Length: 141
Image 1 (cartoon, rainbow, N blue to C red):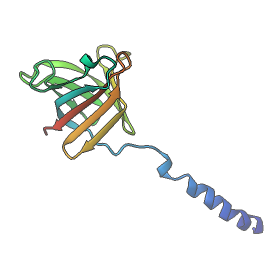
Image 2 (image 1 turned 90 degrees about the vertical axis):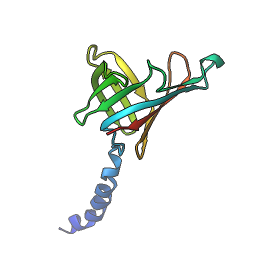
Image 3 (image 1 turned 45 degrees about the vertical axis):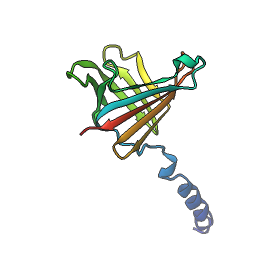
Image 4 (image 1 turned 60 degrees about the vertical axis):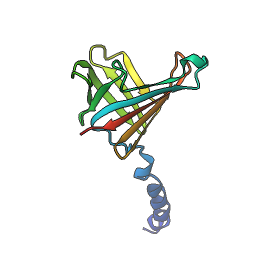
């Protein structure tokens, strides 16, 4: 019993250091419908590759819906045309999306995802061009 009392403080210290804080989870809630507002490419090696697209650009204007069961769907804003669907994984502040038609094909990953009120901002560095990309979405539901 005396040995147990001697080691009890050490055991309590070790157990308290293994808290839930060590488990990395996300505080970013992305469930719902988000309308793409803009995509900015910057710090590209070729200056002509820098630029911003906004929802006024037909091909760029879309809504992405993230459902609670890790399913997503993308539709064109103007006419509701189905564009893509699949699954997503959100770990900490990183988002990965896989297309349903080809689960092995990664649609995109975002190095960071931040939600501020009804604005969702994602950022990444493009591997093929070395450009940095920032996407901004507005929550619509």
